[in-house]
Image (cartoon, rainbow, N blue to C red):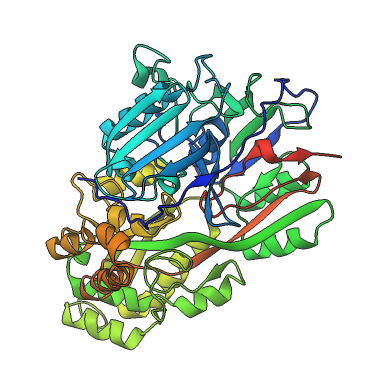
Length: 519
């Protein structure tokens, strides 16, 4: 069962004026914007269920009512131009942007917004839990949609989520799941899907939507392509040759080279992405908490940060700095002596039984390769062998849902700019597992987490104390995971691209419509 989201009281009127829509005019004669990623782009085509890598494409195809602004740290207009809440925070009314149409040609009106969000809620999968506070949605008139809540939440922030907040045409086809599964879209964004080749390097192509409400009078890209290139050196060579436009992450060596390369721009900033090593608490040798604690202590946290030369920062607790729930003063340290003692008590370690652990990670990520190589070298003298396997994300995730590994290595980022999704999705009991890939079933932890949403509204200090307790339970008492680092985003892109801005609430997303191609 999905849990209610952490929320802060937001009871004041927020409004923003919109400009009249510009006349539609699709751009022409501009080279495509080519985005390169090391993992598969599409794992789920249904915007009501989407919960993975496709965010980088979907944020250009679909739109949400609001968008999180990293400068103001508040929601800003998108499909909604203004909104207000009642004094008790339980009623929210959004005014929709006029003249917007879906790629199917139907209008984006209040009835469509209502139908879209209600369908997402019914899926009860992905990030649909973000709407748990909603008791009803009313389309008062074509331009006004009103939400009644069971308890107060900042719905303007919820409506900006990177997942489960997409507005889409539920009337796009009689059989909507089949329609989406075929690679079709029903969004309202500036680009629409024109080609999908599952499993191919040139996986996905988007084209400008002629009737996009923002208009096309200024220079824009008319085509967006997504390529899957697991080899980071090859991705960099493609960028240098001008065959691709944007690489979302380079290793420290390549980023240093890109920073000095003519004709290439780089961008660097702290992110909300955390590296996570999730331990199998349900089966295999890591079912023993002593083994899990030993692996926790074997990670060379400081050494990894140093080796990555600015690409990462130390993690403290579970939730990164800048979000509700961050716990300062909890940066972990390597302790091989303690790791040895724990292994010996479990019957492993030097002089004991040999221990072999299967670890999986996403292919093409040099940071993960460095982590697994260093961990394997540090554990080898302790009679522990790490069998590390780099896999395409979809294959790794499917294996993880079948409990096919001892250590599952992945990144995690918030569903929207709040810390609750780490605990609500990764460490809360879930059957069958989706992202609870530690398979942790802890009734005490679940009960604690269930208090956080209300406390976040009624007693923020108490909510923070609950996060601190949950952090201790996950990392210390249950030793369900290790958090090696927080990612510093390091991007490289063609020097002629103007207007790129990194928004940490939407990890690795390039809002291509906002870019300005030039010479």
